[in-house]
Image (cartoon, rainbow, N blue to C red):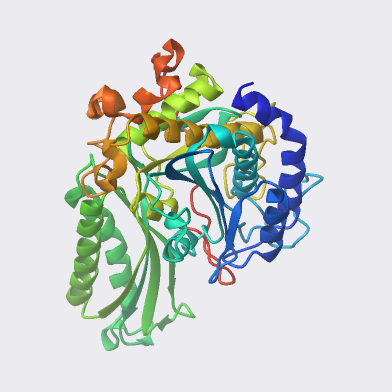
Length: 475
């Protein structure tokens, strides 16, 4: 039987788990109810389980029946500070909390993968590490789990890592997309306070007004992007919040604005940060005010290793269907803390459609929206795809133990701008010798259907929600 067939047999149990997780969403790094549900779902699978110390993570190791390396599969578990408006019978029972980004599907899909792989233990040429992660939505839970040893949980460093993310809009259920090189952007938050000298609105000459200076900074930052940044290695600078003053006739002593910065390579990231700070301080000097900048680097870009992206795409085509998996034409400007994992080991991040039947993917509410709805029918697809990635990657490693992707260097964000990783410049087929690629060692790559060209399908991945004063929000 195929993985997808067996995953469909698990659908009732997976749906029940997903609904239970959805009813009781938890935020941040401390997810005790979610952790308990995951542990109960993993009972009886013969896994070696370790719980996190600084967060309520679950790391589970499945020992294969044959010797070999280890691979990692990740599912994030946390929710968002959003008031749910879906009207679903299993909607959140907790005010102001919702699985608006689909992490309940990620967690459930990873449980399904564990069950599928446990049933195939004797086929595994190595071990599988299941990474159930809190704190993706802005707290950097992946980095904390790395610091606590998740990449070495099997006794040695994993040779590859994979994660997927469902989308409620843009693609029907069961359609997958990935790409070599940058998949998602780096995310920085910048907080700027402009200090002047307050006074009466009728006499600006007797004060030092920070408001015109702040406005000039905002417009100068947009010019910075268009004049200093290579359009083939782009950046986004968005000022989303401004605040100054208390009354129309009062010149305030200070003004404040907050911005988000998105970049796709380490090189452009460094360029934008330096130019941002230079621009703000320069405009401040011209206006006779002083600027204070708090530049917070949140998540680095999510960069897929070229060979691993090719392997993931071939596997998705074989498991989901040749017409259900595509190479994404460009990265998305959302961000992900799986990027920390991909900076340490080779791997790939995959988008998976979960738009419910009967809903137009072009107009459905997107990830993070209070009305976002995800199709339970995506659960078997997520479980089968994750399980297939692990099973086939270990088989590929057994055939070619010296694969070049044993080093993450080929996926370095500094060397992997969107232009360099575009299909025209660096397609998976052209990027590495066929004999050395895990895709070439995969059964998926050997089938004509998997190798057939397909049109690119742009999958919109999650974008940020507005920050709140009460809860941290993902980059």
